Image (cartoon, rainbow, N blue to C red):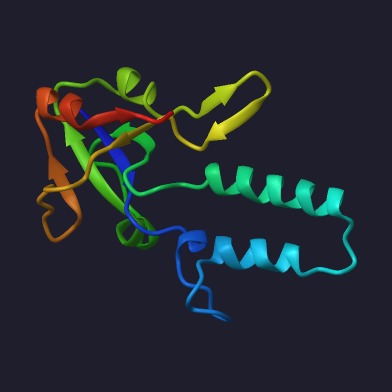
Length: 144
């Protein structure tokens, strides 16, 4: 049986900025680049493009981060950040195929290509959830 680790928290770039809670960390970083008087316009464009690429490559809620054999040891940090999704009829080799990045030519576009729609999942006290193969595939989505 395969066990998937599904990312289950907001990335820091999506959270309110500590210095300016009305903006996310991503928005704050964009403003910082815009207001940096030491940078030329070309440098600002380059930095903002790099920031956007980094933002697109972040882990997002529902991302399939790892696939492993069910029943292995778990760390405390894993239980805080992940949902453990068990699908009895999917073997480990097949499951690892869902842990890939979305690539284009020579760069990573998204950290993970596949994610699981999490709305309505019922977790136990250890963040475990079991799904049948058909339910898993109905919730499995591909990023663009």
